[in-house]
Image (tube, rainbow, N blue to C red):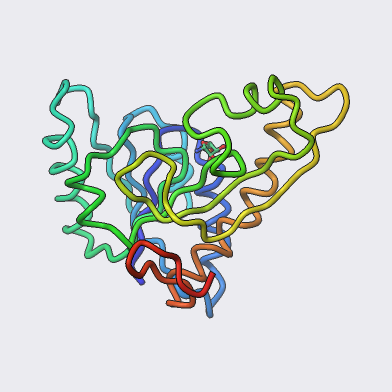
Length: 200
Ligand code: GRF
């Protein structure tokens, strides 16, 4: 499966995915890394790994999200992309784009969904005093952070945790389960059918 990773920042999940995809029997081939920010640190890391990169800056498009997405879509088409992986991609995508890629686009979210949708998940988990926190890989649907779960990993919240310690513990699990989830989707072992993740 020709796969693109979309990023906005440092791209540590992207690196984990690129590493996993080096295995000869891995069912996804990472052929493009695209960022909505030209200064995304992950772009250099992708280029260093020999992967094609694209920078589609959202700012010139102002409030016209679809115009930005059409430019992004053109890059995906130019590279023959079949599967889209969001890895720290910090733009909300419109129903137009999400519908085009439904069943073929996945995201990782740093919480045990459906808990703590949206941003600042670690701070909110600490504030809520939960005993367990974690991360979720899910299919992307038009509603934010609401798509069917592919894989989840839990971590304990420990006494004395702050945002940094908790997010580091979760990130370690993100790097473990995101490649697994991508393999499940790329191989067809888990599919989105009628809004449900089948095989999960
Ligand atoms: C991760 O915590 C991911 O769950 C969230 O954004 C962060 C991206 O980190 N969506 P990185 O760029 O993969 O290092």
